[in-house]
Length: 407
Ligand SMILES: C[S@@+](CC[C@H](N)C(=O)[O-])C[C@H]1O[C@@H](n2cnc3c(N)ncnc32)[C@H](O)[C@@H]1O
Image 1 (cartoon, rainbow, N blue to C red):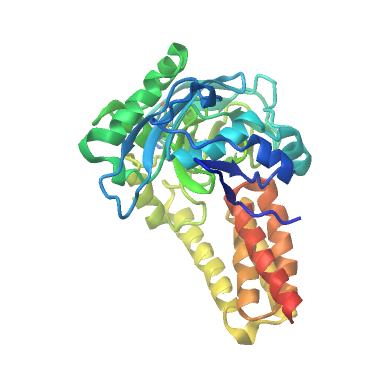
Image 2 (image 1 turned 90 degrees about the vertical axis):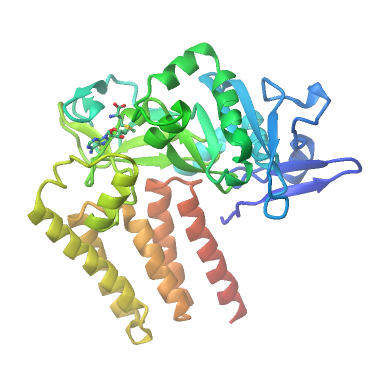
């Protein structure tokens, strides 16, 4: 069933109520009417409306009313699903959408969709230890089978990615300081123990070194997950991260069997980049990659050639002459083989999404739907049932459905 990510603005006489349509959950219209929260900012004077936030929001206005008229505010809950505190620096409408999710999480429904619970494996699978040239890192203590959820964590601090309209006179930075200060003391201590590069303002440094890009209410944000942030980067990692936009949970999942003593690694950048692009991207994170893959020039050249090959096949499918069932099916088999050899099988959903898009561009709706459905199955498994990458495929399938219906 296709559900679109959208937010409903419900008008009332005096104010706006903002509501998350909860794309992952069966939020019926009467329920939505009942639970839609009011958009809350520093001018809201009714403290009864504060829940689920533990403090009145602190806000700044943008200095560019034309480009961005909204305020930016800090919201904190001292108790995020019984785990720890969580602060978010974001726009009031996004916080309102998020508060529906905080008060009415549809976790059982989501778990049914994905077929397994939001729980990490409870065995003592790993330890965090100092590693030469990398600071701390995470090392397997026992054998970890493929697909094991090794870690599952909720964010401590989240901030909107594009904060320039509110950066004047230290406004956005002040909100970040407030976001950290309002957390329970043990959570603040945990944040301050995270790795940093010892440059600039401490919270900016911690974000620059450790944050993950996530999507909140469909808008890009950066988030801190202090335990998962101990996992180092590898260009061909043994784990992937999976993000749930409905729960904000981040998971580290074994992408292959991992042996005791092996370092647990993820890729900080999209897996399908060429080596030069990867190098530049990693340097923009402020370090040089010392992973074993980067140290082997022969392996790097082989890998770049294979990635060029993947791109060439997808490009070839964009030529109308190649758009037949037989050619598409041969191309998919070859792409699967190359992705497997390249350690990119978790990206096969993204690759098939591009193939489905090529079929759609060639007006081959039946093939677009078949390939799109295959892509969606893989995205749900590796990216998550409520992840933007899955939603992208769902949107494509919706367009295909509409066009099939029309013809
Ligand atoms: C998110 S943190 C990872 C955990 C960190 N090592 C710690 O001590 O908490 C990112 C930082 O770890 C280090 N790091 C991660 N992956 C690395 C790699 N492949 N090679 C060298 N340093 C790496 C870099 O200093 C980077 O800025």
